[in-house]
Amino acid sequence: MEWAVEVEDMTVAYDERPVLWDVDMQIPKGSLAAIVGPNGAGKSTLIKAMLGLLTRISGSVKFYLDGRLAVSRDDFKRIAYVPQSGSVDWDFPTTVLDVVLMGRYGHLGWFKRPGRAEREMAHDVLKKTGMDAYADRQISRLSGGQQQRVFLARALIQEADIYFMDEPFKGVDAKTEKAIVTLLQEMKSRGKTVIVVHHDLATVKEYFDWVTMINLRRIAMGPVDEVFTSAHIEAAYNARNPLRREAQDVGTAQ
Amino acid sequence: MWAPLSDYTFQIVAAGTMLLGLATGVTGTFAVLRKESLIGDGLSHASFPGVVLAFMLLAVKDLEILLAGAAAASLLCMALIAATVRYTKVKFDAALATFLAAFFGTGMMLMTYVQHTDNPNQAGLSKFIFGQAATMLARDVEITAAVAALILLLAIVFWKELKLVAFDADFARSLQLPVKLTQAVYGLMLVASIIIGLQSVGAILMSSLLIAPAVAARQWTDNLGTMAVLAGLIGAVSCGVGTYASAVVSGLPTGPAIVVAASLVVVASLLFAPGRGMIARAHVRREARRRWKEGDIDVGAN
Image (cartoon, rainbow over all chains, first blue to last red):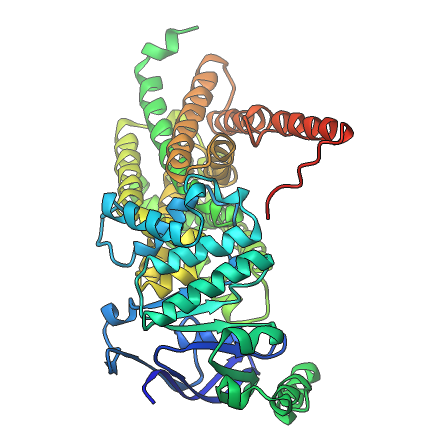
């Protein structure tokens, strides 16, 4: 199988408390992959550490584009990140269109401001996410679902090959969730690799074809049909994880 | 009462303070949006021992030397706060408050010590505490103008980086934008804004000139560019009005008059701005309640 992402022996800690322990994982190219696990299992930490937004204590992360290793700054511009929508202040003085244009900032040089070409691209991706009618709207006047659509549009305009998304279904209604899933599947059909931090076990089988289950350590990884079993869910969600207990003991002992 | 306007000293001082207000308004826009309004207060207090130490060590009173000392002390304080937050369990606000008081206390201690020596030159150091715009010379205005121009230039060159880092720093990092450089530019803008205000507004009140214009401007607009320009204008006008008031009314100190003027603009904006102002919001609430009573319920779209 051709991998898009390959993680080896990755450990991440906040102070003296390990959050991820010795994680090995791969994501196949062109897959729609879920990362699942209970609250506090380290799902967001996992993708942030993979993207280098958090410091890794050990381990390596490799990305592959067009069958070769990503090395340069330009290569890494082809890897997109959609943060949790709750991580920003939605009262920031800006509009929907402007937020989407931010997705092009990496491609614009010094001094360059987004121009007509970028604005056309922005309207295109806003149409795809069903938000074009809101292009001029102040972002403080968006619902949770609309915020997620705007973030998704901002990622689409990057025209990346590998997408990391942190809980894109959080705070959205059923209709928006459907629309987002359709969009993700369409991205997959165009050969993009989409990695999604997901919390709803009920929809894993329906939405995704690859799953990584974590709880501090990697519990299971593989095609959803083979790996997403009740035994693995049990293992991930029931905190019978000796290292987790040790870690908590260390955490409370001081 | 318009006589001061044609007075050369007034013109010099007003030009200096208005340039200051313009620069601090723009810098403050980013500080407010980053929710770092208090950091300006910490840095301005922290700059004071730098002024006194520069004077003690080099025995000169050239403004640029004293301000370089102020900048060095501010930067040291900023580094200490960052290191404390990173390497200890002390939180940002506690670290800020601790170093603010420690630095300012050190400055007061050193200044009192210098005042009791026979150095006749020391008179005037205390003006950096509350500011004394009336002592501004044409040369001082030139320095202020140069630093203000640098601040505005940085804001223009790094505009989209400053904006995105303020809104979503992790995303900026994921785009491979130079986030560390942008943070350094922002820090430089902050420190530069503060040191050019020390002479006229003083270490204690300086942070108001960073925050008040930005807070006022935010009430009137939902656009970052407009907000920055408006904050610059409000800063400049507040400084002009404050300077004028102190020129007309004898005994009225310039720095505090400027801060009062800026604060009045904030109060007026919080009350009267359309959309975000208290009166407009009360009106919207009243309207909504009236409609609910009539059974017209609009819960809004998801």
